[in-house]
Image (cartoon, rainbow, N blue to C red; front, side, top):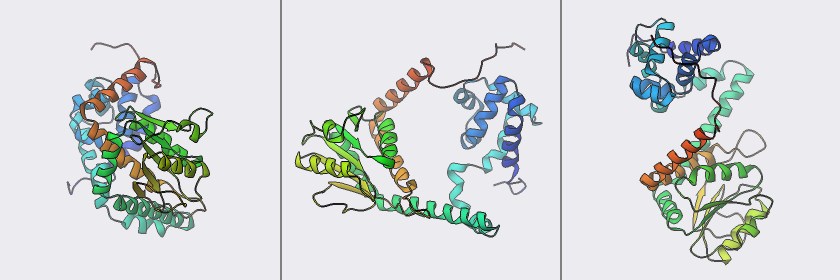
Length: 303
């Protein structure tokens, strides 16, 4: 790290970009938005890669650098190399939390809440373990058909997991779907299939019923919950226990989401070329169908 570099410089740069973006020409606004949203990638990637990811020309980033008072793209990128969120965060320590805790009641509550979330994620991922994860990935990849189920608040987790996992596992269904019931959607479940169930105390009746039905029909079961023992007659082949304890009266899902994201990383990696091609096909379809909002594009001006 450059000892002469002001560590607050990147924060000031991003603040300046946010303040000025509404007044920028369309191409420069897209360049600014990319930097705001992706400071880590911006710090590492060459200008051509950055331009490709942002969907604009490299010249737009050069012009943005000039607008901000830098003499080159590299000069603009330089301070971001000391703010790589994805690699340097763990080296910052907890001093910033201690500092926050001494800034009043609201700040102290925020510090406690942040520490609670960090503890949940760390504990949940530590309990996950590589060997257990590999066994679960093998179960999912070898199943004829996979189903993922949840209800109430945890249904959002199941929806997200299914949304991404289908890139690596085309034979995965989210249940219940439409206006059916979970048991109706699992009517064809068999020994070659797999059920992924997500439930946290107080446990959902429909999820418990689905787990019992899956066991009765001989399907393999992956349970993601806050306990290995959730109800009589529920026996899972694999259990991922996550921590949900929070400062408010309801369970918090940061640990569960981190575990699911980690599992998705393994699935996509195991999916290899086919998974990557499927992801690219999904992205192309969304782009072609106008699924993502984009600002009005200005005509290219040749200099």
